[in-house]
Image (spheres, rainbow, N blue to C red):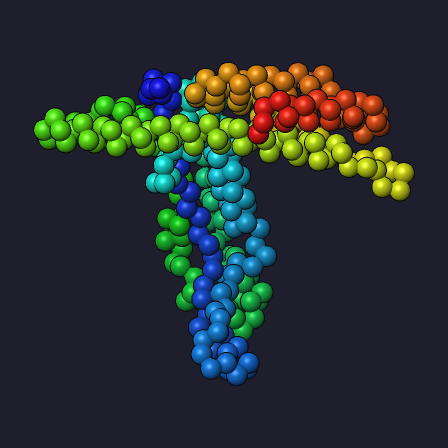
Length: 284
């Protein structure tokens, strides 16, 4: 199966300054106080402890990484992941939003950097050392968001100066890698669906405590519906059984209100039965 015409590879790199520094002196003091015979640990300081401006950049970076993982499929150990063309426009649109959020958050931190250092002189007490903080001219370079799109290589696309026997050997080797990656992506999609279904089955099976109504978060349904929508764009192998399982889940919850699940035991058991039936029918 060739997927070169229906997908691409995307590489995402997010650099966020850790704001942490090893304090060798404090590490030695701890070892001495505890009478260790050798260096038993390290004391790493958070140079901006309690500073939300740096945490804000980290939060955006973390959200972006998680979202990127959800929107793409595994491809290689190098970090590149596969993005289907069906999902490209939505991916690119949201990526641009994250890109701006990241730049804005990093910009706020950099703009306040000098003042934040001054405040840390009081917050950090005896742990504060001004020379541990990078110069203001360097700090902006500590934050970077990069992404690249590249084509998926074809199995027979070996443009090397080698004889036919060598090229044939390389093609056979890559064909196996290619097929292994297809299998890996298929397992990833089935794995996401299985995780969603088992989570729902477990939550719907929980008995209310002390006569109270069971608590279900709205995300139990919204996440499942989002996954159903995503799988329509990520079924790269056109697996009919995956599509059937996806449709089964979607039909079982598309008209369900989370409020009904909280107050109506009959509605809750009906959805639970349908979810468990999907798990049984498709032998996850």
